[in-house]
Image 1 (cartoon, rainbow, N blue to C red):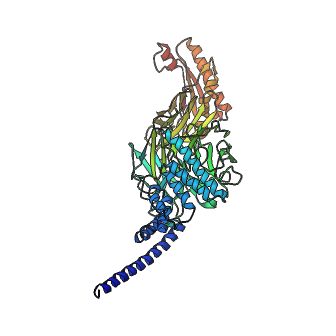
Image 2 (tube, rainbow, N blue to C red):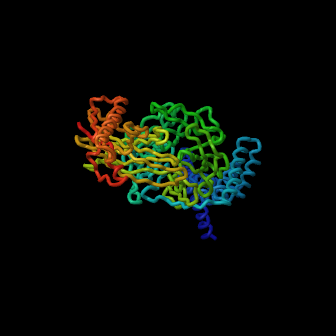
Length: 634
């Protein structure tokens, strides 16, 4: 006893000392954790709470706090055992524990159990209408999710890999319609802007870019120090051809800016102006393929809910006109976010917490009149597992409607948020085509900064004007079906190129590749218009469209002088043919003069049947010989 008692006393004192030490360390960890939690840095807070919990296994307070951190980070499966420890203890009295358990069971697809906890939370919040409303929303999400998970859509979801994703959050992917590049936002370390946001201890947002080369993505690089700043910069939209990037910056409560790609240099972002931006929050947007319509989200006063979708159309002066809110057929009392107008110009995708969302933001689609903003169909949930119990936002859909690029937190990810590609087989047919290619100098093979004009052959309405990239010569144009297009390519110092593309109504998605070389205008250059026709000596109206291109070429090249040379076939009398060709040449000259071109720059001559390019031995060859040529004189 004399020996054992001092040993027993030593053990008791040692255990007591260790316990006191552990208690002191755990309190230090808890204080540090609370600091990071309050600043939104849940990952660092979690590490400290887990350290405290390790010193006191089963402590309900540390378990509850760790569970909250897991939940905030989107790791709901990991949160549940910690929250259940807190629930099984009599020491945690807060009613919000039931609400958090309901959220976690909802997120892990255990909907019946989630509903039980939401119902329990309602009972505990009997005198708090706002909290009851929150619980009712959770129950509604669960019931919607039960229905949607019964009929999943057939999709394949693939992580985009470590050439794009990092251990840091990566999100907001945007792509042109040819999917040749991807631009996205990341909170990884930037080689120049290395600062961290003190609110969550993460690197500031910067914008990165990838290029697809032979179906493989290059490693992501920072896009430009003209766009990326020491503060937050996030990409929120991209034009169909990839030459206009729309950027969110936290100025003035959060506004949208645009940067234009000139050659290979991105220009300084410029505000979209007061029609789009306000003193409220404008966090996201989408622009139509023709560049004439913007859809964006704003929290400005007068909306239907917290965040609503607005629309603005481009005016004749090139500026966007006054914005107006879309109707309550699309905007709900809940929040809407991340609109995306499909290249077909008819289908609007958007995220909403309303309708039959299965939790948070779900993706919905509807049809819309892009000119008036009228919603033509009831928004439809695109289904599970495209939508989940978490937030689905910032989806970018491919032109053929079979793929989408988006960000998500998933177990197979590299970090918190990663960028994924979704592929689906069953989808509504898309009635549009993509015209793409490269425009270059016929002689030097160098790329040209050219203008591409689309005109409706039936109505002669100009449908859009597009430009090639001066560094690459690339162009991408979206052509909705049901239109006969006249496509004209022009550039200063060059002759023009013209072709017709007929896309009948009901023609399904296709890609049209057209690599075009333009001939430089030098003395002796001969241009052969294809659609100039006559009735006797007079021009027919169908000729006017191509003649207008010649007029534009003369305006663009103000020192240009030309000769209008007209030829016939060998049918009829030689002298009559010579006279007829002279009259036709004069009618072309007169038309061009009527459009404002000085007659001193124009010469004309009829050659009759004297210079055939093929033998006049059949109807096809005779049609080739009946031609009008434009010869460059100076």
